[in-house]
Amino acid sequence: MLELSAIILSAYLLDQVLGDPRYPCHPVRIIGLTLSLSERALKTIGLNGKGGGILLVGMTLVCTLGPYIALHLFLTALSPLIGSGFDLFICYSLLAFKDLIVHIRPVITALTAGRIVAAREAVAMTVGRDVRCLDQEGVSRAAVETLTENFVDGFLSPLFWYVTGGSFAFLLGWSPVMPAICLMLAFKVASTLDSMVGYKTGPSPDFGWAGARFDDLANFIPARLSLVILLAAAWIVGLHARDGLKVALRDRLKHDSPNSAHPESFAAGALHVRLGGPTRYSEGLKIKPWLGEAYADPGPEHIRRTVDLLYRSAAIAMLGSLAALLIVQELQ
Image (tube, rainbow, N blue to C red):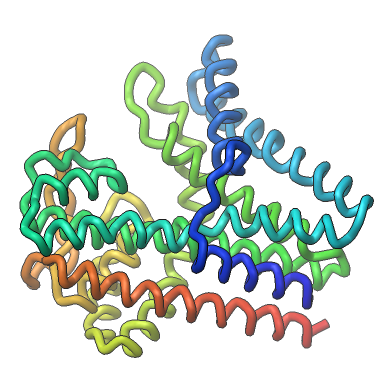
């Protein structure tokens, strides 16, 4: 368990200092390429419905986990130190917190300077909505929403599945690191499937059903766990923690997604701003319910406060994960 804790803590610190590593064989790149090739092959042979989508999930998982397991076993056989270094690098590649903040800082800078066009261009790098008509409040709303949602998707969920996989493996008497990273990779498969095929429309809308449901399942527990973590962090940074929980309990299931509104609705209450509402995408206007409807619209200062909230939340999640691993070790 010491190795398991050391790897995740080191990966967290590397991400905090360096951000997401950029290299051609990044796991998410490999997953995306595998997914694209598998999707093309399945649709070529006419498997473009729910059955094909289920096969796509299975194929992507096998083609992602198989090479990792093979490389892990090969490098560990060469040298346990090399194997541990490889595991650390993969784990580090699968945590994405700092880049989430880095991509939002230009939005804050542009809004503070009154450069709305630059702010739209900056926020467009992180959201899927049509930003061309967004005013300062609309850009701020988009930034707060993407920060809170991606805190779960990019950081908390992979961390949760690492701890879960490693803990169960340890309790079963297995070496825990490889199962821990396998569940992290499986989560990234779910997330990539959802973003690439989960919400596609057109002649085969059912094809993305399995990927979207897989992602919903993978984020289900972390999204709800995020409320506890955000509550503690909001109290530390002096936000309206009680209002955050109140709004979250009321509004967390208002979105189509069973998960995304959990951290967003908490942020709405903790910041005393309203989020959600009508949102324009390339395919048209989508009428979303308001989260924290009674509050005012957000501004750049609320983006800064969200960044502070998430930095504390990431630290709390990391400390909680190490504590959970210690408890599991004591149970053995």
